[in-house]
Image (cartoon, rainbow over all chains, first blue to last red; front, top):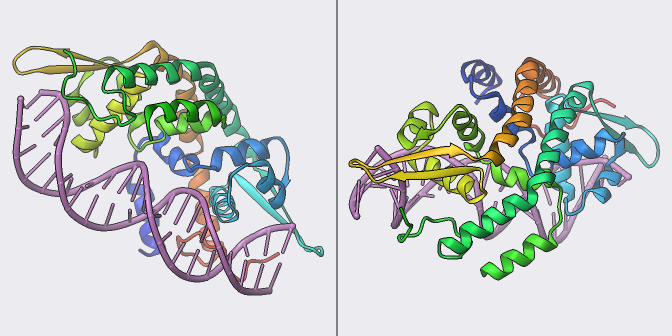
Length: 138
Length: 138
DNA sequence: CGGTATCCCTGCAGATACTG
DNA sequence: CAGTATCTGCAGGGATACCG
């Protein structure tokens, strides 16, 4: 697939904008990185420490992806040892607002969702697999 | 992994609420389903037609998952032929608001993101792979 | 109509080791 | 410090076929 093909594809596929967005920030770490950077610029190792569980590799990939989408900026200071600072761009700043609203929803209804899931599981077979049981009542 | 283990895990892992949310609606079709149902109840085949590209299998899986999380309700009418109606629950209704805000952001900045991506790609090697090129300028 | 069952394949993501 | 390279696994998701 050549770069030219990419351009064409971008124009042709005119899908749900939310799907585009999820393709950008739907990764396992993207949102956490954005939220961390929203509080101020961070260095690579700072992010690595504050985002628990992320591997070097995935942090790098996530930052690259966000940088590519213009959501995060990367500034290298040619010091010894080298230091690299990441920050959110104005574009991402706008994104943080609705993202926070979503996070608020998630926090507010976390218990509801957990309860629903528990009820569902205990009603239909009780295992965590979400296959619909044969004996589902009408 | 037994159901009991699931419960324990739910309590122990106390991650970012946004990640919980993405685990629920981060799938490829979840958001589109919710948005479609937000406009009113739909039958299975209606969803299948209106959400372009979704397979029977994935639509079923998505609906099951949303139902399990209490975001979608499923009502079976024992007619011949059978008809099944899906609708968003009040819980999901609250979710639609911030979701729409996000969609608005995505729509508004779609061009910006595309431009950023294009600039990034043409600056660093020009291929769609987001590997950092060796010759990246400081 | 509204699903299941099965096969398969891609790509996200983790683990580990190495480097300018 | 801030990465890259390589291997590998596994879950998400598509295609196809069949069922009550």
